[in-house]
Every structure is written in structure tokens, then in C-alpha cells.
Image 1 (tube, rainbow, N blue to C red):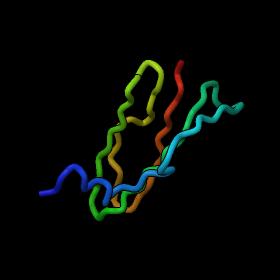
Image 2 (cartoon, helix red, strand yellow; image 1 turned 90 degrees about the horizontal axis):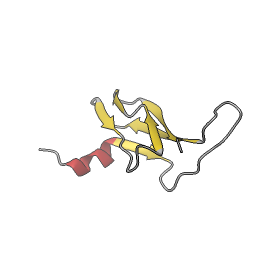
Image 3 (cartoon, rainbow, N blue to C red; image 1 turned 180 degrees about the vertical axis):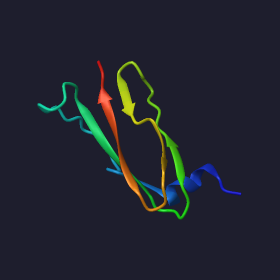
Length: 79
């Protein structure tokens, strides 16, 4: 049986430390992109939650990540 801590062996998240929001002409709200990579040989389902959903929006907040693939999730400052 696998434990919840096993996800750290299956998925890498970058950057590892801290986030800095970016504001540029292509987006009206500041955002930050996380890169998630599935290092396992199985599909991984992830969900990202925020402590303050009125201030921060995560897109996509839930996704199936196929084996060996990577994707980006954006955290948007919405206040």
C-alpha cells in the first residue's frame, strides 16, 4: 500500500521554493506558473487548493498527468 507521502517520488514541482507573481501586458492579473512532471510509470491525478480562493485562482486546479509528461498550472492573484 502506498502512502500519501509517496507522491513526492512520483511528481516533481518547480520551482521548489517560493513564488513570485509576474505582471505583463498579455495578462491583466499577476500570475505564477508551476511546472508539474510525472516521473512515475502510471497516470497521476493532482488537485491544487489555495488557502484563500477569493485571492488566488489555480488553473487548472485538477488534472490527470500521464506517465512521463509535464504540464503547467497557473496561480493567478485575483484581488
